Length: 198
Length: 193
Picture 1 (cartoon, rainbow over the protein chains, first blue to last red):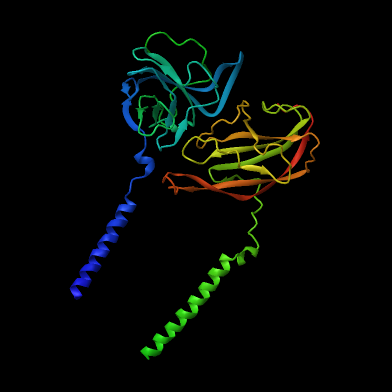
Picture 2: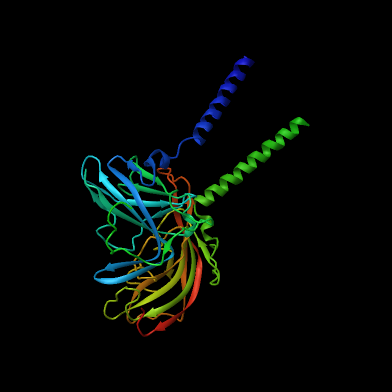
């Protein structure tokens, strides 16, 4: 009789412990439905589900020169402008690539800038299979978010369970204090891109 | 001795249960609604204020009669402008700063302000983590609206939940009034910028 009660208590306790353990170790919904990363490095072609992306060049500048509604505009920032040049191709069907995020070394996420308005070479990029297209992503970042950063590129901003290219930016030259080695005082977005591979 | 202790405990439990039941019924019937509400405090102007996902530092407030940071006025309207330095305290770019400030005691034709980056008059850009930017909140007012020389603004903050109750997603919820700031309001007759 007594053993039976004890046994029941042990089973009850074990159930409580097991249930509690399952509750605290339950994966976060945000993690379960997170985008699926496709990792790569600079200058590699990374195959995401609906598009291929290759990071060609990262340029840092203190100001951006752009043409808005026929007027020259000089955009300044409290940090640095990072202009990322990528080559994009669709894999199977024509699609768009709309979302770029600069993820700093500690996980801070800097979404692409909205201050440039609509431009042909800014996201969303319409891409087609077999036709390589130059696509820009422009970010505002503090200078201490460059070393150890990575670039996240996805077809949509909220794309649960869709592929997300995650490109490590270790190839960006930085000096000993983490500052970028080369910062232009001004970058002209409307200047023609240099020909050939860079 | 054991028996008296036991009856004592029984008495305590009975009396306690009665008290708790009485308090419970009273609170259900709203007996505590008459308690004075805790008034939101007056916030300092010289230090930055942590308001939920934003760190804010009000700079100045004024009445503008012309186009201010690219925000156009309708004819016969003027605008109340509040300039503040905003810093994103979260880990990702965000633009949920519409309800941070609200002027008290003014009849607003549209409670939603137009918000512009003072740097280049971009309307409602996303602000990035840790990058402080000066933003201008512009509320259009009727041309004959009377604005006191010293105006108070309510500051609204939110709380962070690592899991919300519906999807278990992290987010900012439950806006509450953090406090009040009071600023002198100058009248700028000329053009803004």
